Amino acid sequence: MAMKESGIEWVGLIPDTWSVIPNKYVMHKEKNLCEKWTSEDVMSLTMNGVIVRDLQNPTGKMPATFDGYQYIEDGDLLMCLFDIDVTPRCVGKVTHNGVTSPAYSNFKVHDNASRDYFYYYYLMVDNTKELLHLAKNLRHSFTEEQLGQLKVPMPPLSEQQAIADYLDETCSQIDEIIAEAKASIDEYKELKQSVIFEAVTKGLNKNVEMKDSGIEWIGEIPVDWVVKKFKYVATVNTNLVSPIGYEDYHQIAPDCIEKDSGRIIKERTVSEAGIESWNQLFKQGQLIYSKIRPTLNKVIIAPYDGLCSADMYPLDVHENIYFVQFAMLSKYFVGQVGLITQDRVKMPKINQDELSNVYVAVPEKTEQKEIVDWLNVQLPKYDSLIAEKESLINDLEAYKKSLIYEVVTGKRRVV
Image (cartoon, rainbow, N blue to C red; front, side, top):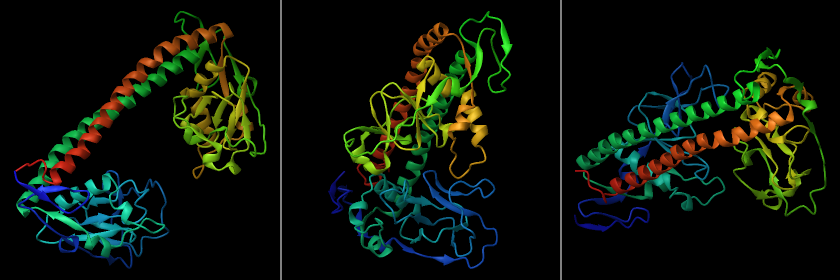
């Protein structure tokens, strides 16, 4: 197969039977505004494509009206040409008639081109954000005129469609495997949660006499366990300081903590984040708990001294700290927290008094340690299974991107 230089930085070599033309000869922008919305399906561009929004159970921002939205039709190519640096997905195929935000750029593809091929081409461009270095303004936006001037590879029309058909089938197979792996991860996480819940509410002795805890979320507990309010298990210890002089301290914010795991996933120093917001000193060995969106179960044992914001509670724990952390990670604890904060839709947050009155099931400290030791053996098994599936997903996502690049640029021929 003879190849030639395309002259396009992110494409490289293409088959010598392909041409290269400006994008304006492939598609043109068309904006047909809806003066009065009459219940047409409202569409959004997402990582899962252009989808119909569920207006009965909305997520994200909702406008006061859909008047002034633009019509889009099956066969169009929808693009987001602004905030390219932060928008997760900037291109999608329209497969359903409806209306969408006028902020999007809607394109009609000409008769000499396959919409599906150019979807995959611009998906390849979006995967590596190739347009970002060309978007010089503060919003990292790209005009339709600039897009029109960009050179694009132009295979023969029959080959364009063959490429799109091949990628539709192959990417669908990859996506099925990814979906199965994600379902397995959810299952392992649920099993892990069940193991934690059983251990911190029922203990390890299956033959022990049980009693009603009196708390719906906890259920039955061993007869010699007690139920305590959280304020008797741990105390919020606020230690406000001037951040000046602490610039080299590590800073922990809610986004530094992994959901449901009790692990730090991101570290930064205060000076990297800007010191003004971080004025609460915590000590190594304290529990650090996120009071915003508390059902995400973000709680860690501080591995060092540092600063956190007012979004975090540093806690001095009076029981086995590892047992208390597991209790806080359990579904009975988060269930109570969720009930308290369920009506706070905009920014769920639990205050100190509310946290103090959450109930915790507590055995003697000797048994707490036994439970912690047992969980520390059992839980890594689930973590390992989850990590394997996550690695598989990462490999498949990388392979899919590589495949799209090779096929849409003709380096792997499918006809």
